[in-house]
Length: 488
Image (cartoon, rainbow, N blue to C red):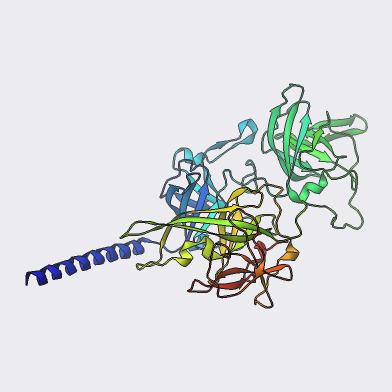
């Protein structure tokens, strides 16, 4: 009898513990609001705290749920919850940054002054040509400064293909980082830094010319620091040049159509002492698109990379489970010049594969790294997953160097159905490509084939992922990938 009572007591205690955990989970779910959950990484949280705002165009559209250190200790990770009204504006080409007081010198102005009397907060900006909407659970790289197209006084990040050059000027006339670079009255770039030459004989101004405008700079281009100047005579009349530089000086340059040859990164030019005398060429009678501008030379073959994923699954009743996976991916540059890696979602998203008796698993400390063939290791963010549940995901590399090359567009085919005979192409732990082998569906998923490319006739048509609900492989075609994430 005593044993029976003891057993009943243990069962009752166990049921009470399970019920308590269930009630806590239930109450926690009631506290969660609907919306888009995102993880944004920053080099510095800048005083950001849980409970502060997430704003879009000055309107509060979400909340910072938590701020923690990333698993490798190199980043601060902010967990965001964006309300449905703001979630539709959060896209793969949105910029997220922490708003704090920023001062741009005597002529650069100041931003973020409202945070002098209140907490820092996160703001994000989406350009007019917005991309695909972010999926729930996306892992993004935050910007350290506001994008220049959102706040003109802020420096924009250097993008793949931008021209980086140095202009030597006799003296600085109020130029600061962020000052505009102008061609034919249009801004084509900005000043990145202004320093005095070690010899003290001149000032060195580092310039960035955007990728789409780099064809306007040749070795015949004339540069000058734009300042208002008056020319002419009393009887013939006066002409005022560069009057727009009255408040804010800028760099201006001009070159006639077809003059000179294109310059490469690192080009150095000496500025004119004053605005040169020239006649601006008229608009040609038949404007034609320049198609002879050559960008960086890219490989003619499929570029494969090693993908390494680490995360932590939080458990309520037991020790947290570390997760680590490795596999392959195919690297290319999308239509905006961003470095994208296509791979299997089951390789880079533990929430897609892990299960929890109490509901959706709690995945934390996600870190994605991409190993290039030359030994370079880069962090990446998960910006898109297949909304139909197929085993397909898109990563975006952080701080991709300007000379990074990828798979040419002619080597990638976005089909909606797997057909024909495929070859399996993957890379090993050292980043070296493994021998090509016939692709057979139904194989167990391993580090050697997870996320590998399915290639037919020299073209990537799919990714070697896993079948839904199982651990064996299948070919996941690329037809679901959004247009703005595809190569040009």
